[in-house]
Length: 190
Image (cartoon, rainbow, N blue to C red):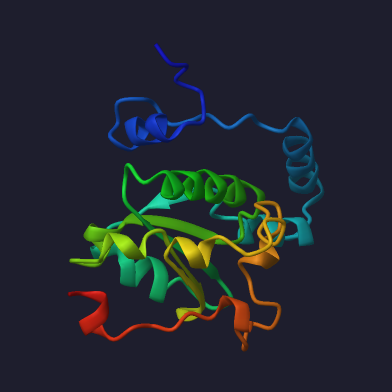
């Protein structure tokens, strides 16, 4: 039997179904002591509190098509959202899910989502998988459609530890390398 505390996709599914208990996060004694000191002194919110309020995500979350508008388009001002459309059984999709899960823990201020392509967009063609969309405040900023768009020509160009690989440097402009031609519906949904 697998370790129920292990951070695996299977255990995440079992937790969501209520089969496994929620994962317990280790408490940081230093944070608790600081909170107690602030309460006893009567200090107001600090810069650290503001940062902790921003860090509200921290995990790769599964959504359905019904959740899309709420989770992506209505995410909020200044919230970056990375959405991965995938299909189980496609190795590159599994690999991207692993990397996005790692990035979600490293950058908890960014919302990382995944959705099975056919649940999110009916009749979404498998040849376009994996697909990654990047949004800021509900507006699409970048899109990576298909395996060729995901795989860079330079293997060092997209490192999981480099968030700038997924985020354009200027939020108003999507770099040419990250632009994909969005085919008309007749080509995308034959």
